[in-house]
Amino acid sequence: MYETKIYYSDGTLPNISKAYFYSESTEGLIEKENTLNHNDVKKHELRQLIKRKGIVILESEITLSSGEKTNYYYDIKKVSADPKGANLLGDLLVKEVEKYRAKSVGGLESGAIQISSSVVYKSSGNKRKGIYGFFVRKQAKTHGLQKRIEGYLIKPVVVVEDVITKGKSVMQAIEAIREERVNIAGVVCVVDREDTENLLKENNIKN
Image (tube, rainbow, N blue to C red):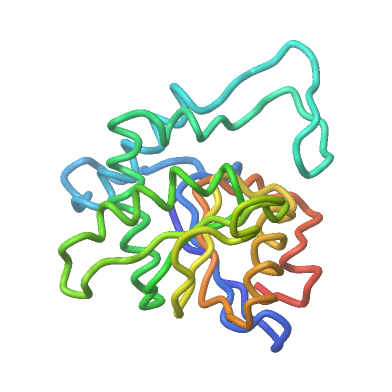
């Protein structure tokens, strides 16, 4: 079943929460078709698209950015670069980030760039005048304006991510945003690998 997980903070990371549309414990939508609302149908379509285009089974193990080794890989960049995938992600994620009255959305390069762009596009013209986008570089540029955060960092801020394993990329983005003296309203991801070593929890974010 698709669901939203909320992590309640003790003050270290205020008001962080996470919504996901596909997780390793997710069995999919089990209701009959005539009981599904429009949003459920979109979630089901996204899940099927992830299964078809976003899961790579490998003969040998690879190392994830988290340091974990695995022989299957979630390639959500292929999903977000697909016209239908970008449309579904935009429709679904814009609803999630709007729960936090977000004025800007983004995350660490490069996983968050296409996802936040879909949200920005889908938010255009709504009653809240749209949501701005940004992305966080892994390292600040050494030329030009030498910025680490590109785009619009406007409060309230929601961090997005394509795949969370341990949460390393999310924490990197949060730390960079905090350096700008901006707090985070929420964290939304597409795929949760549900690793037992979760940096969000280790930073005193309780679920």
